[in-house]
Image (cartoon, rainbow, N blue to C red; front, side):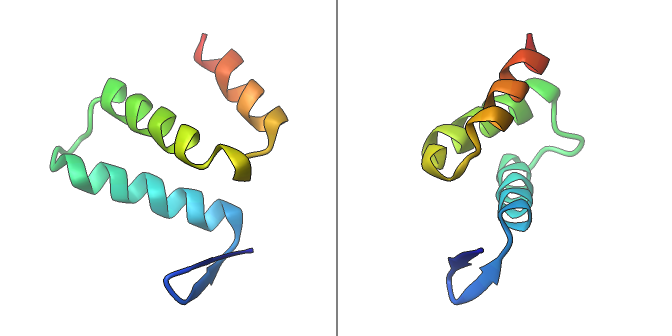
Length: 64
């Protein structure tokens, strides 16, 4: 569980919220795939200590 601004989220909910926030900040709908990938990678690096290493490796291999 992650406590963020007084609210408690599961890790999945928190990551989903971060992704939606990144999309909203682009002010582009639909958001280009490259923009989403770049923002997701930035989010991953910012929260690396919270991410399961196996999931990260799966993401990296899927991206290739």
